[in-house]
Length: 228
Image 1 (cartoon, rainbow, N blue to C red):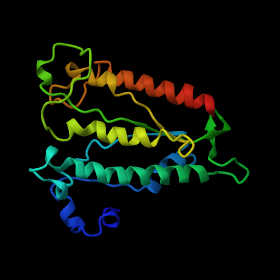
Image 2 (tube, helix red, strand yellow):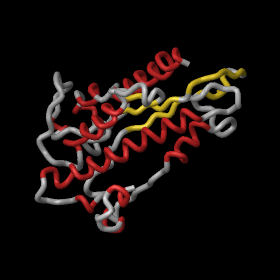
Image 3 (cartoon, rainbow, N blue to C red):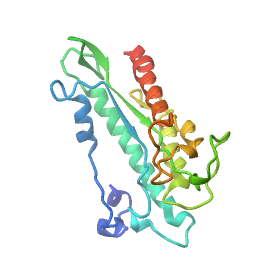
């Protein structure tokens, strides 16, 4: 896809850092898990996050020490192209997905409690959570989200990746089965919730992960479930 959008750009061997591990999965492969029947699937909702690992250490072809953010805006621009195609292909697949010929477009039969009923397949996108500067000095919960001072990984720019999906999915007519769930603010107020290992990952028991779980559960079972 990168070669399609930027035909004059050097080959993919120059785009990626071959020392970084990467795994790519096609839309068809990912949605195969969501749409598969029993005994392989029987899911109603797939939950994904935004571009946490889209940084210039992986996409080394964009790295430029003379540019703000080390060239991260080039990665963001490419990410927007990818996001636009991703939501289009996902929605097209969900819209045509059927298990039986007489089902309404976009709906499938799911087995629930020994019976089966027609249900709409959905994808929920949650924002990626950046780390915190100097999290070891945190005294507790913040009152407001703080702007990051340092260029560390792509943390200062995570909001751009999140914003791309949030903006795209305001078009509910175009993407009725893909939803953006903005649940990052509670985590961004908790620099004290990180693990002892680093200032990115959040530890269990701090009520950030637990809060996400409750938010997602409510949205999937109560709000999306009510529309099924």
